[in-house]
Image 1: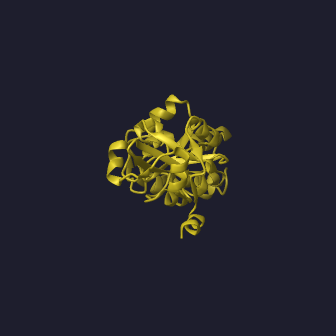
Image 2 (image 1 turned 45 degrees about the horizontal axis):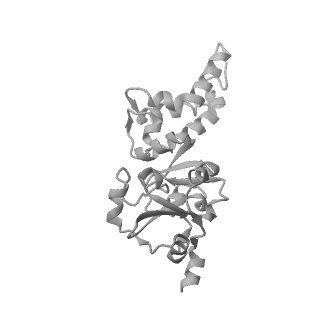
Image 3 (image 1 turned 60 degrees about the horizontal axis):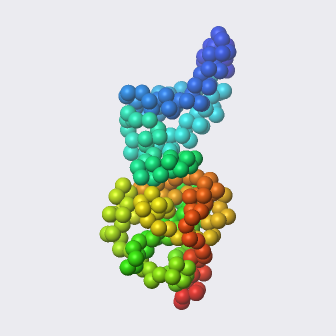
Amino acid sequence: MFGDGFLSFHDAAILQGCEQAVHGVWLSRFLSSDRVHLRFLFTVFLPILKVPGFQRLGLVYEVIQRDLRHLPASTVSLNVKQEEAMTIATTLKSYLDDHHVKYDMVHHTHSATSLESAHSAQVPSHQLAKAVVLEDEKGYIVSVLPSTNRLDMEWVNETLGRDLEMAHEYELTGLFQDCEPGAVPALGEPYGLDVVWDDQLKGASEIYIEAGDHENLIHMNGDSFRKLMKEMPHSIISAEKDYSRWIHD
């Protein structure tokens, strides 16, 4: 007999295999099926794991609940694999793959700004690199800085010897055609754009950037990010918002 007598296991290997299957690959197996419904998970599978006879699977139940939170809240039935639920702009994916960059995706609720994305995804906001697109008669340039900071136009222009201004929002759609409006990634090279980045990102151990929509972030090692930025001009081009306000007020 097992636990409180609710279930009998004649072979301990059965229980061990059950634990491993559920804990290790339950989600990928479910999501690779032709027809899978979350209603089954919530009304049948998860309640079973609460039965006292499944006390050894208590941790597994917590893991499943955690993993389900990464799925889109509006999902009722799934016919795709888990990784397809987290989107990344095609141009970005090709660029990162071509440069052999290891990365993973972080899903979060819909957000309007990079700082909101950091808070929603519960990642350090100073490690989320945001993009601000600038332009002058020479063309466009993507400035990259921590999401906690405000870009200082004087510092940027002094660094680059240019007369840059903020690009208009309607121009960005043509520059980042596979990204949603307002979700510009902090990588300009994949889109054929020059970049200037802030030295305050030099010490970040991890970096997060927008994936091209308002619900996903790309997470990579800080060294990988700096390797991508190695040939790009950089300097102190921004300051934390309170400090920036003190300078210009």
